Length: 302
Image 1 (cartoon, rainbow, N blue to C red):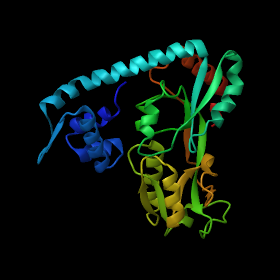
Image 2: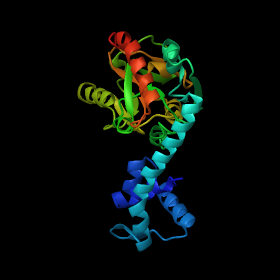
Image 3: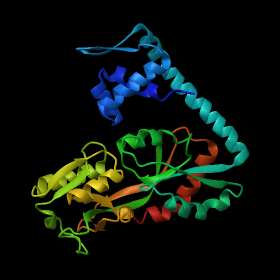
Image 4: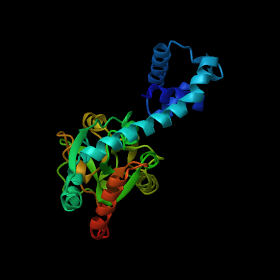
């Protein structure tokens, strides 16, 4: 099927440089170069030339680039068709689960609507919370998974999937267990003066950008440190090792044993819900409709 290294190749050409492609893919320029080298080795073709002004296609590279996007679409449709055939016989919903995006909220939802799908079974598919690779996992909705469930107001995520909000989680602060504020039952924003607060960099999350704007304008005594755009365990490890504060959410209170999560005297919340493919099959859409109908009263309470 379609070679995923072509995604990196297309990005390099579209952006004109390894560095810009790396930023778009959330990986390092070295990783981009290695992937291009691996693709050229696999194809036994020279696809690109490095010039002072950027990256240029060779004649062979121009042919590969021309056909790669067609291959991407054809491969996606082929896999979706094959999975639809299997689904028609198997009647199974595949649900992704990870440390930061566990399937439990889906299971709670499933037991409220499963009478509508009496012949269906669930299959849990584990995946890694890797900030370099999470967008690739989102893009596999409809192929690797039928559903993911998790926190989402990410522009990058929402450009790759549909999202049914189910509720909201409170924004909290995670601290190392030996931090001076760790014993508090609730933190005032002023308690964080002089501290470094880790949070995702500006631009992808409206909720986080709103919080950042408030802190920068009204509480400049708090030093903000950017994290990658999507959390993984390395972010929690960094918080524990550096002794910093970390902007987190209530459902992640048990993610890292060395950290405690404490409410803050604000009312910031972030939506969570059901993620599914932009080209979802009919049975997935039927499930989404059933979930939407049964959760409307709950959603209106948040």
